[in-house]
Length: 182
Image 1 (cartoon, rainbow, N blue to C red):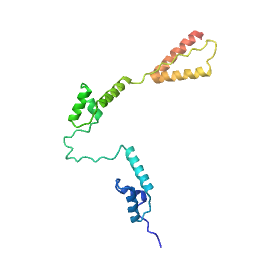
Image 2 (tube, helix red, strand yellow):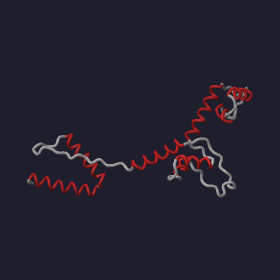
Image 3 (cartoon, rainbow, N blue to C red):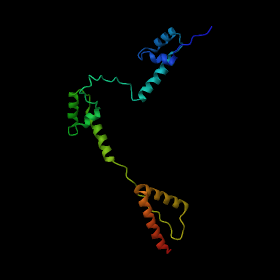
Image 4 (cartoon, rainbow, N blue to C red):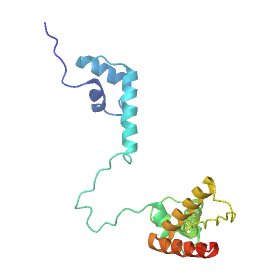
């Protein structure tokens, strides 16, 4: 006699059960449905589902209906709230947040402002000027020096642009030829 196969696999069955249902109850319900699972599988499947929901940015939130969304402001974070009052003292920001029903602490205000100030001070990355390579007049540059010179030339080309780098290289070549008498 052919065994009738369930149309749903064990993991899918577990995901269909309420998350707050104890694992033992899920096992019993599965047994009643003709599935053979143990509590370890229940915990494993739920753990994977939870990890996937966190990696996607948390649990999906229910979208508000368009009727309740009329005239509503977009959701602001606590940090955005703190940033919107840069002239107030941290204690005043906390008091204002309390009026609006936002739980804040003075330390949080300091943390947001410190973080913002550090980001402003950091600014764009600064280019480090390469040190000039000086070779002996009579000796030919060694392999290490020539590789370093190539690296410096590439850095200059990237920093100021290829056309200007070629122009500088041509000027330097003429200067070297004049020193060598060629």
